[in-house]
Image (cartoon, rainbow, N blue to C red; front, side, top):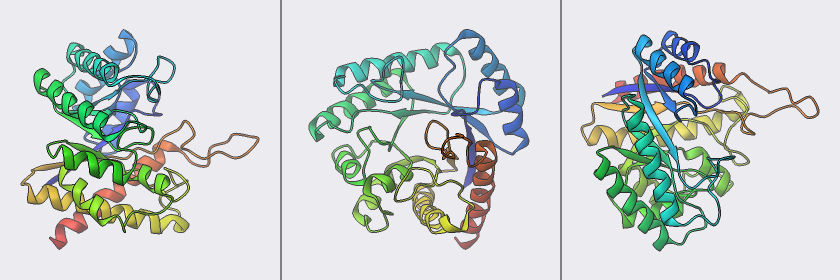
Length: 287
């Protein structure tokens, strides 16, 4: 089984030629993220992917506003979320950019289970109708914000594909999730993709995953990622995908008063990619 690692477009800026060139130079296999909002950016992203020979994972967030597309509007209905999903799929298809699959931040944390089952069931039907692969992300503010909510959803919809970002679950539960054996056992067989940000008890992103004081959190996440790899190997997958997704917008800690960030996002994500290449090689050697 081969590991492919993608660079997140979140927080990378809009110079897509440089983003793509830097990703290729750092050994990344592709880029993951939302399409640019404007035609000029879309052209630049298309050219950067082509010139650097990079793959692309698309991203859609359902039910958000124009000002904060990543945060679901509390009053948005299941139908409104589905309409925004369909619009996002159509925009990706119309872009002409070949994509491996679509990562979707979907649903709402406040929905009851019946609404979640309705949404994800119909979302899978939409993906099938458009002929695209959808993988739904575990994320705060979204339907799969916690281990227990996600477990209930996948038990009702066993064919659902999951993008595992376990960092969110740590801050929601205010603890590491090793004891959530049943949830991990339910989710990992449905895992399709990993976003490898390291969270901890008080936040979805440690200041730096190389810091010795957060080594316990890194090792814990690596245990959970290896559970996904075990499932992928058992399923006969030839490729497993992973995206280091340390980001800005309140995730990256900053010093009070000055607002100076405590680290460099590109350096952190490169470190995470290099670390997981070694982790995967070690894991493969043991198996």
